Image 1 (tube, rainbow, N blue to C red):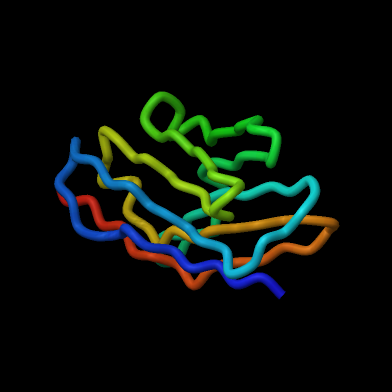
Image 2 (cartoon, rainbow, N blue to C red):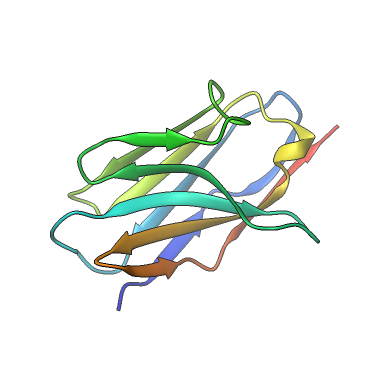
Length: 115
């Protein structure tokens, strides 16, 4: 099985930036999707951004123009650059990987944006 480890979360003021990284424990060949989801206390988990092994991306409307997702297939990693952060972005962010119908999740990293 694949283990995903997130890093880069923290506390930042509104308007600031953070960069999240996710590293996979094993190399997986073939088509796959990696992405970031987030969940605020008492709310449903939602998709933030995702990227295929071919480089196609998809963003939630709420983060378009502010967040950028990228990946390094050689390193089995994915990065989320978050700019112009808002208090509404406060949540636990989870790394996700899906391949051949199997979905793996990281443990999550806390992002807190103060007013």
